[in-house]
Image 1 (cartoon, rainbow, N blue to C red):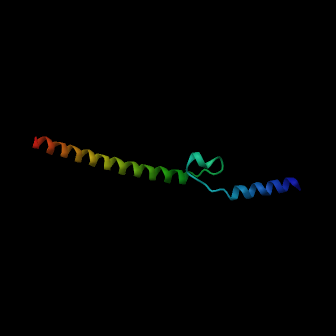
Image 2: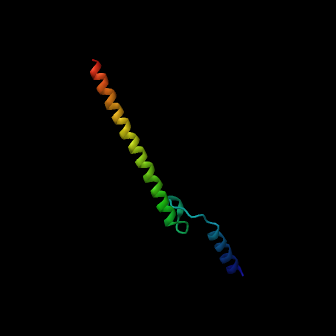
Length: 72
C-alpha cells in the first residue's frame, strides 16, 4: 500500500512538471528539445538585431566624426 502511494505521488509530480528549453531550469525530466531549439532561435534573432544596431551606431559615429573633422 505504501509503495503504491509513493508510486502514485511520483507520477503526479512528473505529470505536473513543466518542460523547458533552458538547461539551467529543466532538470532531468523537464527538458524539451523543441523548446531549447526555440530558445536558441530567439536568442540568435536578438543577437542579430543587436549586432545590426551596433553596426548602424558605428556608422553614425563615423559620419559624425567626419563631419566634425570637416568643420575644424
